[in-house]
Image (cartoon, rainbow, N blue to C red; front, side):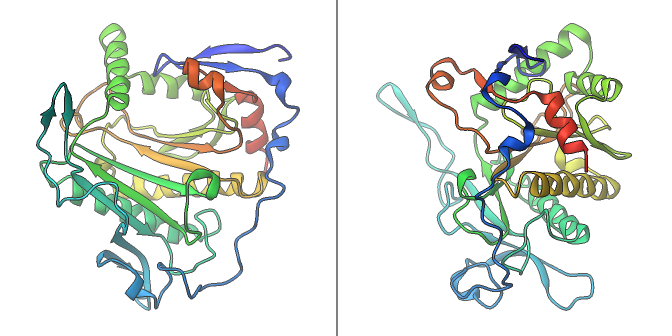
Amino acid sequence: MESGQIRLNKATGEWVIYAPSRRKRPQDFQQASQDKPELINHHKSCPFCDGNEMEKEPILLEIINPDHSHWQTRVVANKFPALTTLESPERTLNGIYMIMPGYGCHEVVIESPEHQQTLATMPVTEVEIVIETYHQRYLKLMEDPQTMMVIIFRNHGKGAGASLRHPHSQIIATGIVPSHRRWQETEAQRYFDHWGRCVYCDILAFEKQEKKRIIEENDLFVAFIPFAAEVPCEIMIIPKQHQADFGSISEAEKTAFTQILHDVLGRLYHKLNNPDYNYVINTAARYKADEPQLHWYCQIQPRLTTPAGFEMGSGIRINPSIPEVDAAFLRDK
């Protein structure tokens, strides 16, 4: 496709502009200058490395590796939390403005005792323990009736907001549901009210039929480049079984999700030379877990381009890459 296009995201109603004249090939986005991880297992100044426990907050969860010789994952409170349970979720007014104390919870998931690892380079069995850690903390945080939403996310690389190299993810629980999430819920509800079906299930069925944007598939999950991807090589991983809540996944689904996440992160690592990226597990807010129009999924966005003034002024993203071309590039091992 030589000329540009504007595509509509079926799930959100957002437009994305495609300008292929701004680039040549998918491999043009390869991070040629990206540093490879240091080949060391331990860093004396890293607060997450084994033996530096004095630098960490109290351990909230620890999972031991299968041979019971060492810890595999740890969860600690974030030393510089965005939100804290020491605050109250009660709202007040300051003149015409509403204020709410910074109530919530901010945790760090230390994914491995080894300093140089990433999810892309770890054995898949170790990544599965990371997913198990996510699941256990998600369920624990949702036990608090004041928690309205739990966001599980990973920032990889400085360009994606990571301040430490040691492999880690973060979990934030909030006492509010932001308008961004409510807007997504509203769009899904509107689609369901019109068609009587989940928009994400329809997207999944069409992607499986077309196959042009699919990167990887197993019995329970599909990974594909969205039709209206906002950035080059954006990936969506979605369960085939309709379910709104990440907390409701089965043991088999944890394993299958681990396998496909490990696979696609490995493709990004090797084909784009370890790019910076963010991923987030988008799951239902409290009281929405059983809604028929909602569907949880994992969204991965490599940081290969920088939004500029047009994006800021219009709210429309410009993607210089074509989803079908990116999918073929990542699909080809």
